[in-house]
Image (cartoon, rainbow over the protein chains, first blue to last red):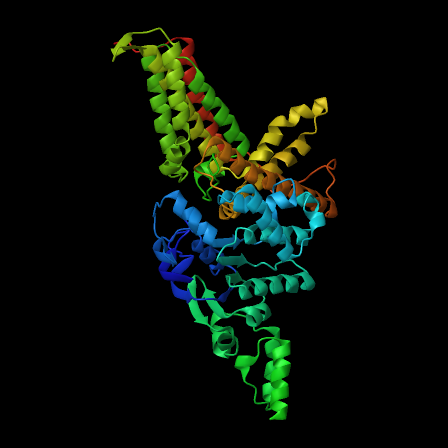
Length: 284
Length: 275
């Protein structure tokens, strides 16, 4: 699994001279959980829409394994469909994309579009719903009678059921309560451990620090950094240049550092790893 | 595909932008009527259309509207014109017959289509000028003003005006929403461009249902937000901007009236070219 961006520029038609993406070059290889961060309007959503050819670069090219997305590359439809099967995108507030009369049918809609037989689609749908924690009593309900959080889970199951190799998430936790949000993240971690590669846009830096293995930092359409989250977040200068607020955890880590704890920050990803690190220092 | 069919308002401070929207609506109706009048001869008709077209181009220049937007507006018309041409060719059997490849075509069929095309083109161009020089809100206020007399037969004009202005306000939002849902469904493998009729139907359903759902939800939220801020549909409304008939209108009004009178006289007295 490899994603490569080569000097990608993107310009929305009505804007003059302002590039939403400005000379983006990076590659992600192997098995990754990448976080895309940056201020509002820095081009995060534009970037991820290039990964399944919903948008095509104005200049440059995007490669996903052996698929190449280029300027005005009028590829045959079948190929784009293959690409969209490989890369599943969950947009912001995906609960608005539900439309079928039952939950099960809606989740099976995706796989059916990719030429999976009806029975198999239902099977995949049930598996996906089980993963996101929607139990059988919901299968025959209308998606419109569910709560917002449940609808979001169903919508995400709708993408998981397609069984993509890369899952792209645009702020999957926006507007969820902390409990559902951490359940959601555990689900994604679970998928990652099952071999999926993920790309996630997020404004919650603590989540990015905890879960991501890579971190793409955007600012005004330019890619500033492509680093490990620990390398990025524990560097004050990087944070300032990218105008990114530090994760809440950092406040406490800094306090501990001031008290002369010899912490190895590369190991600190969340509260539990922070405590482990503190213990290790105390024992040493 | 997702551009609004009529032009968008473009900010500027041209002569046309400063006109009173009520006057602009009046002028639009008057000029459109003059397009639909029947003049003494075909040559006369086309001369008048040509004159109107030049006038429109000048107005567009004054109002800083790009000619391109007129072409963009005409693109969706192409299909309709071809359709009308075919119908005309089949139905109209007057005028000079012309033989092309064993088919007999009557000249009137072609002229009829040309008439429809030119009239539509001029009409659309005039409305483009109106919509790109007038803010939607001003437009609804002007409409409300024209509907004023209906108040006497107990029609709630100001409520209707509010409904219209809300509807106008939500067109861009709805278009944005449509684009978002289309993208989301496209990543679930829906193809909006190709496929059989049945597949297309399904594609459209997958777009329309979420759109309806979110529109209804949004309108409920909007109603709540309005009530929270004390909106009372029956209260007398005041507004921040008041339309005033100004000097620019005083200059423009006689021009439009003279133009229309000329057109009317041309028709009434069947004035023709005497060659």
